[in-house]
Length: 199
Image (tube, rainbow, N blue to C red; front, side, top):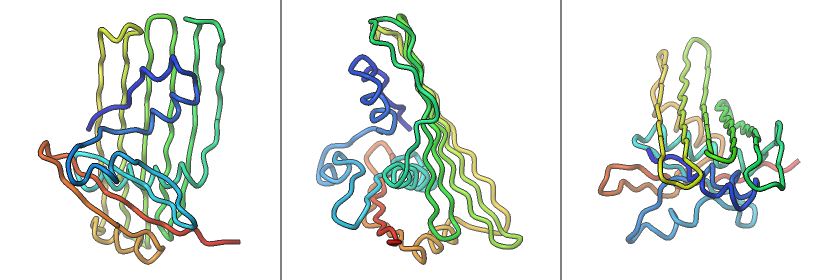
């Protein structure tokens, strides 16, 4: 999986918060919906997820839906002085039937480097059955973009539950997979659509 682009920090904290949720993009027939990213259109919220597997693409897409539904700035400090230290943390949470998706993003920068850390989790428990998907991404970039270190990992824990059970619960909760695509490098993209209940 490709990590967030930390270079947006120079544009400001809001731009970095937005960039932290971005994934790699693709060209070709599927590029329109993938490049558009997550958005609202009328009553429908669309989340684009990307990952090396369907599981982490799902975690990514649900996290994007959660961010559009509710994002909270947990802490933050923005300096107007060029090269001064900047740090911020945001969290998002979405509940889709029995599935809970969360995302925690931490950003930091000083005069010499910029860092972004994202942890996305999806959890479902039903009696003695459970599944948890956790995706972690870290990126550390030198301010001059000459050096970059990116890492990602996925952990799936399941007890008597499959990914199909998770997709089934999401469908019952109104989250539908509108489109799915695997690019030539093997990266998986999902377009999730959800209509939040009013009231």
